[in-house]
Length: 305
Image (cartoon, rainbow, N blue to C red; front, side):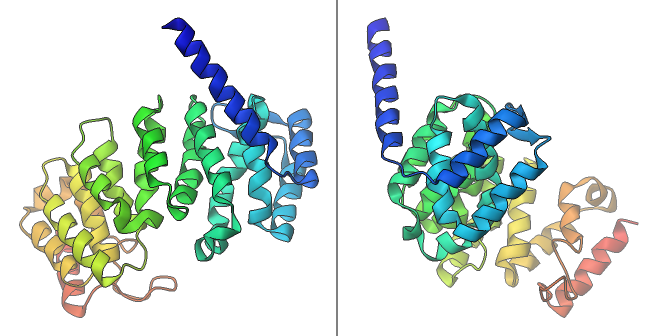
């Protein structure tokens, strides 16, 4: 048994080395990462780079100039590297670069599928807490490249609950209805925080299609009656912010059935805030409620005083 485990470890290392050797790196990114490794204070548990302002600025300036698609291969090389400090540096930048994925969303082929596969393998082998920060962008890329099964396999076996939860919480943004069945199964899980994060994943479904709205929103309206308030509240948030229309009435109906005391104690009361349920122009967004829905909202808010 012991010899089999050793053989498996050796095989994994060989596969990683082989994969990394095929990754084309950018010499300027390599230089910056090596410089950070030598000059900066690195908190590995949380993937934080301290006393590193100039070096981080150099990285982000270069990233803007050459494009995220040119940066990701080099980050992948270091993320799957045996040098844990450099893997942490790569994790830091992967986490922050998820905000720049819009170009890849429009054209996933800008990043080779093999890069995402290597990142998934790296995530599987990064067993400490910092893997959580890498799980979010890697899940995004996995969904864009049709690698849903591979990333969910990592979720099912990873030693960090936070990694599993991050994968499920971010799955629906780009996985959409392809991963909906897995989300529904996870939403009934007894594992720590998994049901909550699976339900919360629906909040990342921006610009729902009619088909998505019909399937996801109709499912969520059954969740708002769950006894676990954290879960029912997450469902209500999506109904108000993403589903809108008649689904807002379903949430308002539920809140109106509560007494004043119950409403004040319910976490669902926060849905009445302008952040979730806005009746006037909110930043660049129009009202997500009708005049009647907004009137009902104000009556409910008055009960909270």
